[in-house]
Amino acid sequence: MTINTAEKGKRFERLMVTALHCHNIKARRVTLSGGTADPDLHDDIVISLKDKELRAECKSKKKGSWKKLVDWLGDANILYVKEDNKPSYVFMRTEEFHSLLERVDK
Image 1: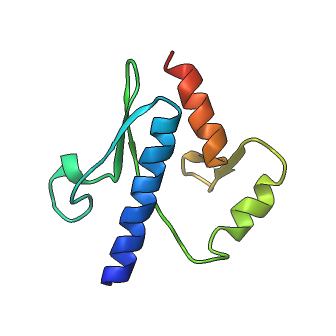
Image 2 (image 1 turned 30 degrees about the vertical axis):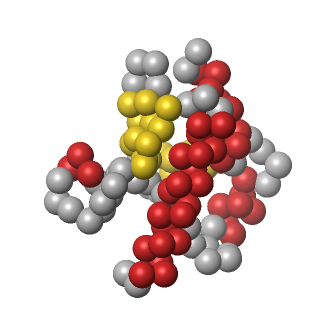
């Protein structure tokens, strides 16, 4: 990973932590995330809710990398995606997700 790529990733992680804080959600960026074999330092962000801790990965890619997902989401609030014989996943807009977490954490 080049220095510019690493810096881009750190900027995005900090941006997401700040956005969570704006919704009164406790969150912290994990220093050295992904740069060590320590499982406690693997994920990029730790979100601390009232009764649960969520671990988050952040990925910032060039234009077009998520186009298919964005197109599928359209005007919907949530996109569920699943590959055969694999678990399902949820894709949604960040602001909506943070608002949801804020309501859940009350």
